Image 1: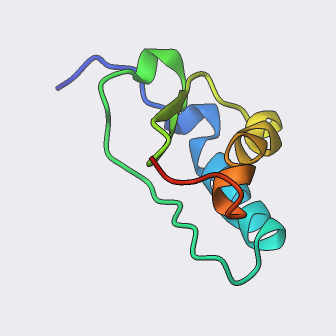
Image 2: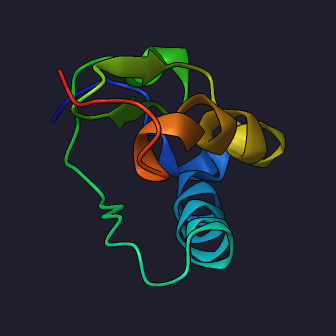
Image 3: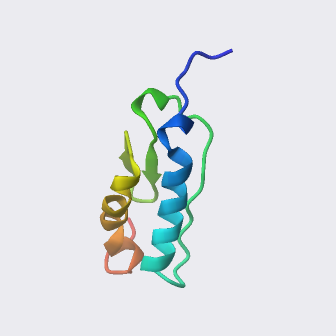
Length: 84
């Protein structure tokens, strides 16, 4: 049995749902995938959000951070930034 802290009590499920919902509202018809992963071994830092292919990693995420995360990838998703 692991003694690692789980992200679930930190509202990680609601964060994922809000990311999905707001991404669909912001970019209707654009294929943006938001998925859940297993433990990445950094649960002590609260819920984590990783954005690919930009390689952005957000730690200690709360629902209040959802718009900031989406803002961080706005240019890429809207097609105004070239992929790397």
